[in-house]
Length: 288
Image (cartoon, rainbow, N blue to C red; front, side, top):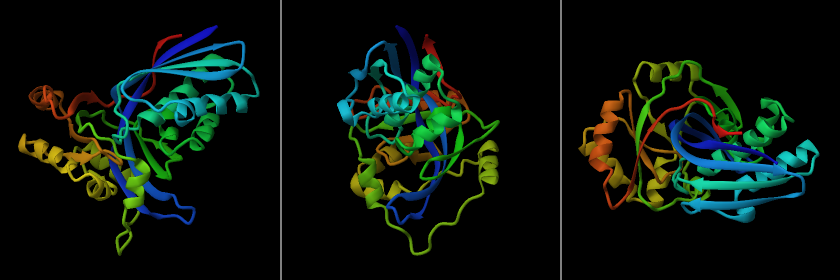
């Protein structure tokens, strides 16, 4: 039997612009994503046999066919043309329905972890498989700060991109990504495409041109999110945004000390979960 264990990171959308809705029903977007040090733990064991099993602990997690990790395992084995018994374990720390990409990250962790054991595919192959699983899965295959386009399948790694510090608030209520996208309203004048090079350079300078084209839709479905934004503002946080489709809200900082100060003030809240995180680059393997 072969075994591997890895940390599956959350992400934040530092920039998310929705360009419009495509004829196939999907939304065309541009985004800058950064993986952060809020992790689920994924363990994989591979042995002779057939089929995939899943066990979960920690936070609420979809089970069976609704869990992307099982789909990722089946897809990997099918594409490799091999039969193996794969046992997946998830220790869940990333909130579900928070706009932090936990499910997509877990699916990518299975692809990356299985490939660490079985060594059947290149990164390009994994990216192709990831695109068929979900919008953010392709980003997590490399798990480094990236500019993402299309429906999330076109991923451009941003070299020398700063790793920022974050305080993330989760209001203990999940939002459905599908419902948030369905609630999105196209403006009369569709947004223009941004230049990824100049946008990334503004972040490198510390300008923080935060944008989330889904924020208004998320607020329509769950107006209470605004109270989290106001809490950050009241504490002097300047750069605050809903992450992805919500419901979490983050504030971003260049210096750890600024983030720690706000985290320490909020971390004992009984009304929402508070996380202190840092941008990361690459996968973290714990054992193999």
